[in-house]
View 1 (cartoon, rainbow, N blue to C red):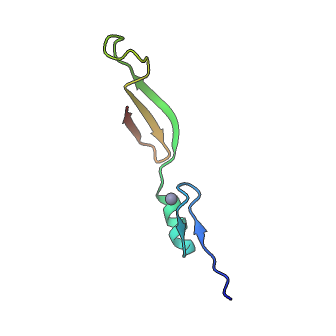
View 2 (cartoon, rainbow, N blue to C red; view 1 turned 90 degrees about the vertical axis):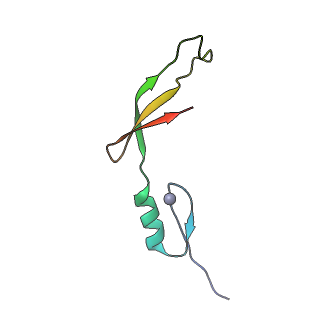
View 3 (cartoon, rainbow, N blue to C red; view 1 turned 180 degrees about the vertical axis):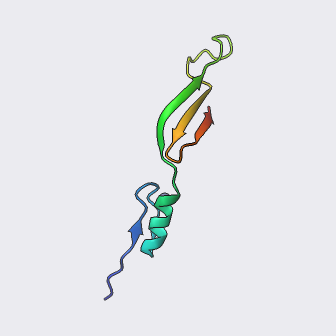
Length: 68
Ligand SMILES: [Zn+2]
């Protein structure tokens, strides 16, 4: 019987046979650090009250906009 070993990216949980592949996967992810801004629409356009877009400050220094 043979014992198998695998490695898992701690960010996306993908499993790899090689440690380096899991490390490279972890390094590739940009981690959200904070919400840098939010854009709301008028109540007549969006009655939910939730923002239409948010700007997220990422670990690589970039601000990325996400839309609903
Ligand atoms: Zn990953």
